[in-house]
Amino acid sequence: MWKQKRLVYDSIPKKDHEIIRLRTNGIETTLAYKIFESTNISGTKEIEVKVSNFDETNEILEHMGHKARSSQENNRIRFIYNEAEIDIDTWPLIGTYIEVEGKDEKHVMDVIKSLGFDDKEKTGDAAFELYQRLGMGEKDISVLAFTNEEKEYYKKQEEMIKNDKII
Image 1 (tube, one colour):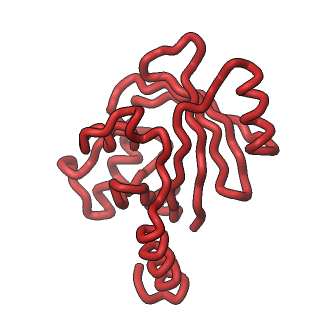
Image 2: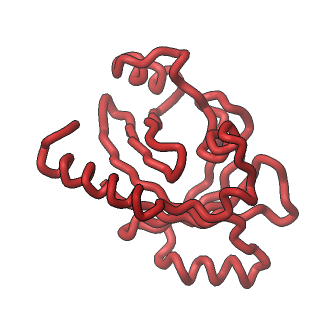
Image 3: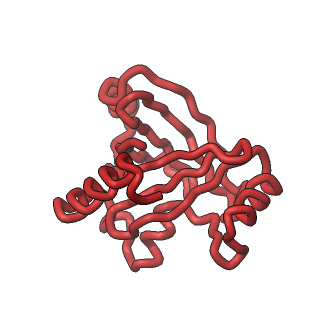
């Protein structure tokens, strides 16, 4: 269980459906180039590397002409099940959803079904698309941070999880 923060940058020149993401959970920091080809399970291509320092990597990107267009935070709980990563992500304003990553699309679908979900409950949308469903655009979500009320609510949930009160 950890809190994540990320900065999102446009490619230069800007290309629709392509971003650069700098993310840290306080322990590990990564830099990724993401290409959103489709909303299918395997529709996102990602090249990711570990970097040693969040702030210094941001500084390098800024010197190269990249200015973060979005600053984001979310909470994540990760489980490993049947060799798949199952992330329970909580975002400001949109709440909680589950992300499943596996070795291929069939593996992901098998895990989703074994968890009791069906095809109607899945989406290949990234968080940005979920915000768009709420009528929010890039300018509306340039800073995604939990309100104090949300922070208190999720802090209580974390304490309950740590004390085995809820699953």
